[in-house]
Image (spheres, rainbow, N blue to C red):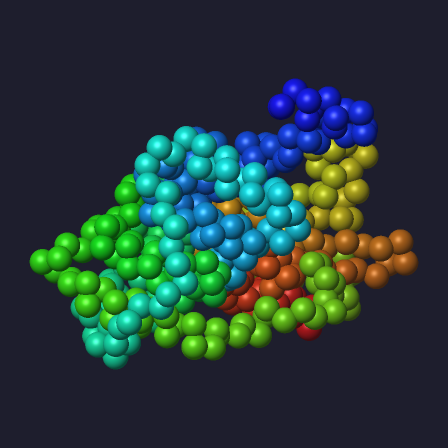
Length: 348
């Protein structure tokens, strides 16, 4: 039967690769491995090992892939087809020989008021009073962190859409392997207690998500441009003084084309000033380790052909959206205010 089906597909012109459907392994490598690790052991993202997946159903995986975690690291993958999402779920389940639950949409018959009191007693230390989880993301051994794996934000709309009440209750009761989430035995929390906590967690869905002013889409692009009333050398000197005056360490200017051409052909009227306050940088890296890719402490000075001198800076409120992390967005906006102050001082 199988061979006749394949023969029929080839007769109508459908390649065998297409008939097989999307490759879940390839999709994972392309979209997921950077955060969850090639071996599924976790990194910036949670582990996706069979032990971890024992406590979640396929619907949870599908909705999580689709919706992500708004304001956290996990992006939404709305562009993936249903077949691609299903291929990812099948791939994640491939090595799992354990439990594969099928939760229903039945709501927990709990008392959210009593659940709030129990949540304060047992849960806030890791998940926060408002359910927003811990600051920062990911696993790292090189920086100081309270948790090796960040407790999830229980008030996140992506999580609340994906997780059923039964799944949340199961997680409280059984914990999550390979994370700091320990099981709460019957001696600590009864079934009634757990239902009450689940009912309280579900109330997070009714709370409006804090709106960040910097989240709104504006007309500004990723680069901010300022005209300087001074000549090139004066502008550079003013910026160096303003950087130091704002308690940043300034590094020697570098031409934009340094390393791209020999020193005799470099345009010395286009330079980048790099500066850093290591305490601020440490705080930013603690929020999101991916900042090793993009560091915001720099401005560029260029002299155009018409003699106009301009100062260019990264629009960090826009760049922050790439990281999908509310904590990082707030830190970037604060940093942008400092950077704007430096530029205004130098070009006033």
